[in-house]
Each structure stands twice: as C-alpha cells, then as structure tokens.
Length: 482
Picture 1 (spheres, helix red, strand yellow):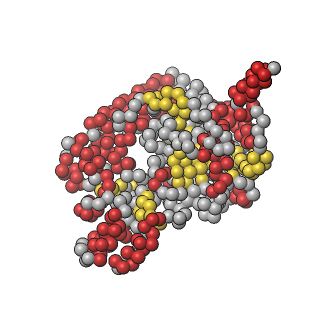
Picture 2 (cartoon, rainbow, N blue to C red):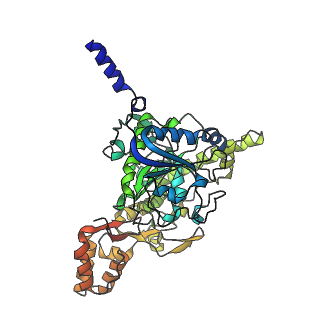
Picture 3 (tube, rainbow, N blue to C red):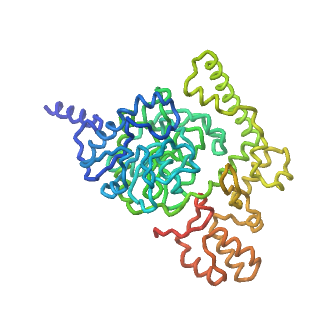
C-alpha cells in the first residue's frame, strides 16, 4: 500500500503544473487581443499566410490560458480598448494595436519615426507587451522598449535565474539545451570571440514552422537606470546584449511571439509569473527617456572598419546577394513567395568600408587613413570619453550620434565616473579651467548652477542618489526612487 501511495505522489509531482489543481490568483487581468476578422495593422516579419493560419485561434488560446491562473480575466479586441479598462484591472497584456489617442485606428503601422500616440502621458497601469506590439505602442513614449529588431528566435540566454519571474509564485525549472547563436551577432563588437554555441533556455516550440513571425528585441542599455532592468537576451541577428525580456517602469517587454499553445511549459509559468511581478508597478512610470544610443554603438561601427569586422560584412553581403539571386530565379519561373519579395527589395552589393567612418571625426581619419584596425583601438582606448554630438539631420530627422568628447578627453576623466563631478567642482572652486569645468558639469548633468558653492551643495545632497545613464542622454541624474 505504501508503494502505491508513493507511486501516486511521484506521478503527481511529475505532472506539468497546468495538469494539477491551480490556486487561481485574485489579480484581475485584461487581455487586449487581435480581432481575427480584422487586419492586424502591422506585420513584424514572417509569412502573412502563415500568420493568418495561426491568428484565428490566438485570442481564445491566451484567454483560456489566463483563466486557468486568474479568477478575473477580461478579453477585449484592440479596437475596443480604452485606458479606463486598465484602471479597473491589475495588469494589462497587450497583443494588438489599440486606437490612437485621437480615437482613430492605424490602418498600417510601419514608419516608426512618425508613429502616432497610442497611450496618454498619464497612463501608468502595469502592462505586459507581447513581441513587437510594445515597440509600436511605446515608441513615442521614448521607453527603452524599442525596435532594435523583429528577429528573435525561440530561445533565451544570459538570463537572471534569480529574478522573480522565474521563481514566484511558480518555480521555473529553466531546462537548458545547446543551441547556435544566429550569425548576425558576430557582426557586432560584442560578438567578437563569442562561441558559436551556448546553453539556452527554450521559450517556444516554433522552430519548425517556417514563416512564423519572429519576436522582438530591444537595444542594450536597460541596466543603466534604476527604473529599468534587462532580464534575458535571446538569439537574434543583432547585438548579443539585446534585451528579450525586460522592464522599464510599469511596462514589460515579453519579446516572444508564440501564443500559449506554442510556449514551452516552463515559459508558460514564466509568463504567469511576469504578470504577478508587474502588478506591483502601478504608478511607477519610467522616469528616464530614451534619447541616445549606448556607447557600444560607436564601437560597433568602427569594428566593421577593422579587418575582422569587415570580413564579416563581406560574408554577410555575399549571403544576401545569394538570397536575392535565388529569389530572382524563382520569380522568373513564377514560383516566388512573400519572403522572396522582401529579398528582391533588399539592396545588395560589395560593402563600402568607408561608410562606417561617417561618424568618425576628420582629424581621426587624418591620423589613421587606411590603417583600418587603428580606428577600433582608438575608440576602445577612449571609451570613457564617448558622448553625444550636437543634433544634426539624418534620415529625415534630427539625431545625436555617439562621438568622442575632445574636451572631456583633455581632462582625462570618464563621464561615467562620478569623480568627474567632484573634480569639476574643485576646478570651479580653485578657478582652474573654470570655463571647461562649468561646461562639463552642464553637459553631463541636467543642472544649470552658476557657482561652485551651488554645485557643491547639490552634489553633497545627491551624491548617493546619482546614477549615469547613456540611453537617457549621457547624464548624471538623481534617482527619484530613493
């Protein structure tokens, strides 16, 4: 009899959690779903026909999944969403376009530099965004959840096992398997010397479905401010430091596209844990805006000038040209597909090494000319002096690029070293290069004090609360959370 009881207990323990009795949470969850009868208003890669075959079951799949874990689950289609609904629910899960703040529905969202506003400035409800929808709805809010790339595959790596989304209320096992990195990561400075394979956690079971839309990754830099956190990376064609799972204020990026039907069992629990985790962030809007790229962007550019980086660019261009040739052959015989159409629209050709020098100052080019490897070493040696250029027009809009701050370089102190502020204040007090000191204090903070006494008082009061953010504009800011 004891053996029978033991066997029963063992079987129960081995069952997936969803097959056992689940104590439903009292959290109220709002799921904003894509209406299968209406156009999405966007397409984030993949084959539209493949997506159409899956999206019809997606709303009910998510809705029924959430109902297993929460007592109150409300589902509305995107076109019916109103912000008042999020006020009456603990967490909102966005999986569709919603009306713009003016009440209009976007016909087709693609040109993100001119994205409309979807959420009001007052919106502070805890929210989880599935795949690329966060990049759309949050673009104009200048969060760190952005469009680096819709190119995320089915796994995760560099994840924080201790994070609550893997531990509470459900323990997530995080079974690992060896997987290859996508080739694209090796075209970045951060991909130098990276092993071709690493241990990864499988999030979704869609590798075999050709044409299924990929997930979204955001740029590096979540960790440079206390209102944001990067929890995981994943295989994509961008930087190995890109974020797949991350939070900025009351917004959470769940970068993976799969519905629960195609999520791995462990990932289902992580998604439920994410909803629980986010419930605590009501009212905690991001206080650092996305206004600048990370300094590693500058290293990525000059890496492509170096021999190793340029060799990668040539190989990549060759692959793209081969894809285009294959697509053209299929078009000639009337057998092209949607993916072929995109390949045919891509530019292909031999890469120009000098285009990656567009942000390098003329005096640096004069120093090194065609000594291609010297540029990368120069930037590596001066990494701490990276700052922002003056605004200039590029791609039809005003941008600031990451450049070497020559005035900071002359002082020999990195801008992300808090001793810089102390040093500049001392220079003001002693009237030593006072004009430079004042300029650097204003450049790397948001303050406009005019005397050493004022700067000293501010610094003494806030020193323990100060943090340096690159994505927030290469500034020392005061943490309002302390």
